[in-house]
Image (cartoon, rainbow, N blue to C red):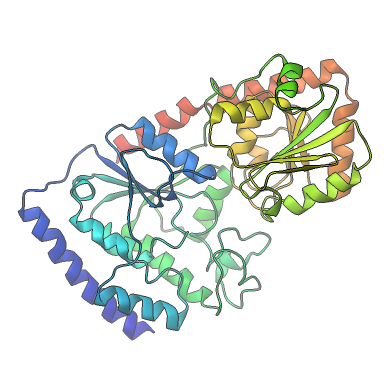
Length: 429
């Protein structure tokens, strides 16, 4: 495997060098202010939203994606596969050796893209999603200033995007007990994958950004050789995600009786998302079955309504999403794997307290009993007990929680703070 890998790298180094030189000789020069963003898609999920917020703010930037879901003129979709001899060889090695995305070296075609060549900064968000290979990044991005925002554990592990309770990533991934976790592997090549990631980071020395102190600490433990690790919190637009006073009128608009207590859950894939605890939501719904005072509202998956559960699809429009948050008395988010979730920030910005799991960067947002609630043992009983406690509070105590939640987001997690911090980072490099 090593011999094939080294041979392919040498061939592609030569290919990359001459492809760049040809366009350089045609008069294409590097710019000093253009930013190119990379993400799996331009819409869908927290990483895509953060990436698109930055891309929209910096008007001279471009966003390169595998899946283009908007009609934005500065979003560019590129083919992840390279359909020539080098691409076929890379895919053959990937298939034979089970190396994740090794064959996805289509990013090399961007070496003939004027916008890409002229860019001064490359800002990567999600690199998983079957569209970027670490080999392609190593070759195409060499010589660029690179910012890399980590929205999950993927750069730390041998394959999975979230390590969950597994600690093997810290020393060395091997004998993986969770090969079926996304992005899945048929054969355990986690040691090799982890080595490739480390090699890439050592060579490129990107500025790694994490939205939480929790993830920054993990990065520093795993890669002490990285010289530039920053924490920039995710941000939300508090002028869009804000409290709506007349909650009853809003409930009538969405055909929810005003007397109902609404418990909200939002996640991509909704109830089918095991990372975010969709199965736990269903168990808690079952606990409350027969109690007509409550209705559970889920967003992000299939549309249906039965008994005390109403499910809505993924919502693209933030104004509508803000209305959905405002329907709720409380948001229940029993996540098993996360970083600094936007859904928690958005809910709190609307003045809706959140009950979540005490993991990852979530305690950096929620102060238990002050602006929300945390569960430490992740049991159904604990979630149910906290829900019952919240609904037993008097109006004054509930309002205090709501006001504190809103204040927390304005003071620490407003979108403007995130944008200014990234702008300062870009200027500094």
